[in-house]
Amino acid sequence: MTRLTPAVIRRIGLGCAGGIALGLGVALVGEASIGPKATPSPGAIAVDIGPGFVPASSGVLGDRSPVQQSQSMQLQSTQLQANQSQDSQSQYSQSHALPALCPVTDPRQQLAPRIGLDTQLWGDGDIGKADRSALLQAIDHSLRYLNTAEAEQAYAAYPIAGVSRDRVYRSLRRFRVLLQWATSPQQLQRWVRQEFDFYQATGHDGQGSVDFTGYFEPQYQASLTPSATYRYPLYRRPPDLDRWPQPHPTRLALEGADGLQGAEGPLAGLELVWLADRLEAYLVQVQGSARLELVQGGSLSVGYDGRTEYSYTSLGKALVEAGRFSLEELTLPKVLGYFEEFPAELDLYIPRNDRFIFFRETQGAPPTGSLGVPVTADRSIATDKSLMPPGALALLVTDLPYGPTPDQLEPYAVSRYVLDQDTGGAIKGAGRVDIFLGSGALAGARAGLVNTPGQLYYLLLKN
Image (tube, rainbow, N blue to C red):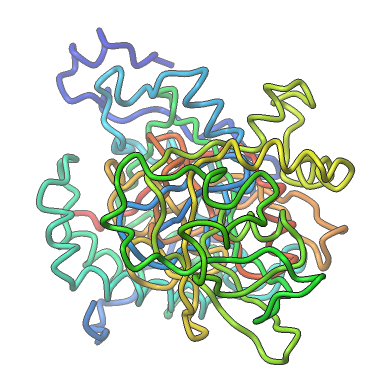
């Protein structure tokens, strides 16, 4: 394999060495055969689609800071990969002038047999029920976004040759037709390989290596009034936040070391709802949204509505730096378990994150990504939108955990069609992807276990 050094990039002139020869070695355990011989794909059919999160803070181990105000629910459940890639490696695509995406010039040689074989669409006994309707809905959300002025502006300066808003839109329309016509994952895979060009993310090393993490929307119990049990508030956006002098007050200045002093300063009277557990209240800030079951009856959904202007400081990274455990063994369950055993240390570590998140009621609206459209469990991803095409159809290859309960999760190798519909402050470079895994405890348990290598491809209709 030719290493994509700066000399190679300069020699070929295009920055992709004619397409990187990758996709054969990572997370490909148990590769499936392509299946029966290829058959012609169905004729084009017009599908009428209607007209066109921002992440708040980040994951407990990393940062998903916003690029605009919108609802967010992000959890970089295990942001150790973000920290590892950004702290111990250069962002290869930036430091070596390598494009974020490179065309796969010889799919038969460069794509492993399993790539594009998405068995979950028709239901896989090992990993759950069929979710083809969910993918169709996610496609419709992207089509809606691509009809907006924001999408037109985003693609006006997109740097990768051959990737345009029109081509992304046509690709989604055509894939939607194929998805409806196909009767098996093998048939869909054949049609996609016949009709689409594959563009591979060059990864954090220029060799296609991508680090995957997961995020989710939590569900906690809460109260509309404070009590001896429900003491930790979430706060509304201060009406004068845009006029707060810089630097903004730190988290310590706003709520105190114990998280209970907000009524003594500029947050007084802005309490929206109270939680019983300080770490849960903090994780809502980390994720940017939540669905809360109220002790008074009913439920309340909250979403991101602004933040103070500080970079994010990761709890997990701080614990690693303090020697509590190594980077290799760091997972979200590890972090939660540590603070369950040593709750007093929350007063030491939480104030190290100066960034503070504000919320609004969202009237039960679904979690929304940075494109302003809902994100779909297992079918929406977050990437660096300065590099990756917003709203586009993508294909990830990695391991994801599945199981009926949080304590029965096991990793499975998957090849999954997804839509690129979100972003985040810790999602930087061509080697980072965050997968939205849904709402609730099971989704949270899955997200906490996703810290896996893999590959990412974007699919565009052949010209």
